Image (cartoon, rainbow, N blue to C red):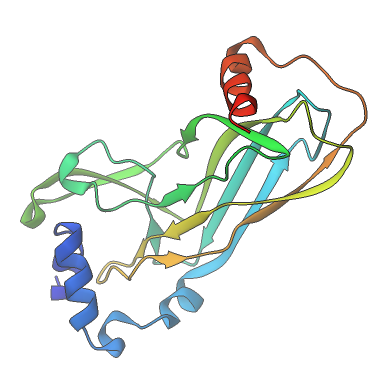
Length: 196
């Protein structure tokens, strides 16, 4: 296994140093993204909702053959650096509630030289989801919701590439009228609205 792969499984500080020192041709520079990623897209389901209604925000990553990505959390602490990072915006037209859900059906493998017994990963397509509530104060009309950050981690069988910040935005049409916020999210929504 190449040095870049081994270093990518080391603690985060070592990874950053190794990538800073690696020649661009060895790490693939930013050209790895064009080779690895078919598309990254976000959407709301449903795409139209009333204030107070719960929707699901989805970020789908579609990779070319031979590449894989990671969940937002690893079960094995030794693999905790091999994750994707999603940062959500503060309450606005939508209020994000609950936690991010990683895609089901992760594959697992061991990386004994890095002390990892179980590293979860996703080849092909992976969809990350999180619930959101349309703000009871949202005005009717179209809104665009951007993540504050989405840092995508991708590897092939030989190399792990520097995480790439990918802009992610989804559109939602806020309908007229309103519905009551679901009981399970009412406290989070009330807290978010009080903070505004």
